[in-house]
Image (tube, rainbow, N blue to C red; front, top):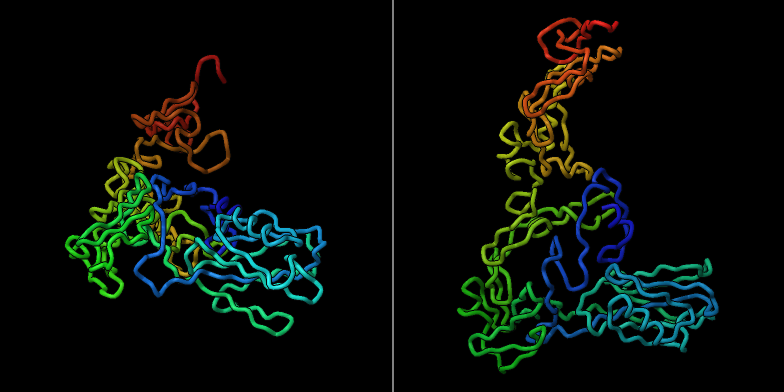
Length: 444
């Protein structure tokens, strides 16, 4: 989690830090381009614009203004969707800026309102129009970061409803435009085969779609919604757009697939500094959704309808584990069952503050509380008698009194030469804890 926060950015290209207890303990997959899923085992299918929603045709347009000397030795970069462009010099031409943006994974058209140089400091504003031609919107804003530019250099971006306008030196307002084209898997006109990454376009009720993203209408006019029967009898057909409005628990352009329960994501980018695990994801981003049944197939060690619990080790990940020699309890329950060193009950209240981000794990991570005579993280071995170390002044208890080795298969101490069973205080007794020095011929 720490590495994810330190070296990447989120969808909005913002960066946060993460330093809570699990920062270096929880790991997850960052999938290569074209792959998805908690373990990157699923292939992604092409996304496109639904060909029947004709009122949603706008490409996203974002604006940029760079106020800096074109002769500056510094440069800046632009982040889009967490991905960074190549270096952009202040003197960049239209083509240089376009090529730099393409390295961040976008296809754009770029135009300048003034001159041929990106940055200006002569009072003649150059408003840069950046049109996203192959990235359906609405899109996250570009984010600029400068390197070695003059202290008074400024790079402005206009791309949101709250800050979507730049005014030039003549007082003319320039407006950005939020994209309205959909960005849907298989254009909502097909089903994705996640094993191959290809779309199976709908061909039902005499209506047929084609293309790698199913955005091409083969038969026109389209008569009804996809599905046989229409919307798979799991949704309602919108007669104007020929789109299915699926019942809860069903998804897909024809409502033929099941959705799975959602839970707080085990692994994902922080939503703020030291705040994570607060975004709801299908199968909690720790399992694979079975689209035919709507059930999560959880990663080993996790359980729950949404894979929302990290289980105890043992026979299985559920609460019947701990090798049947203990109870599988949540961290909150383990804290309430806490005992002091003398064995008396000493409950600790863990997770009582729902607004404390560091306590996100109170009801999600489980551990074993072993029965008397058993120990280990999974209660799989027998414990040996404990006693004080007779060669120290400490009152702490040690297994076999630090004067022998424990056989965890039997729970018996194998004492070192010269040591034997004590009464817990160094004298002869029945504890079999190796806590008494024996008198041996030839030894003091």
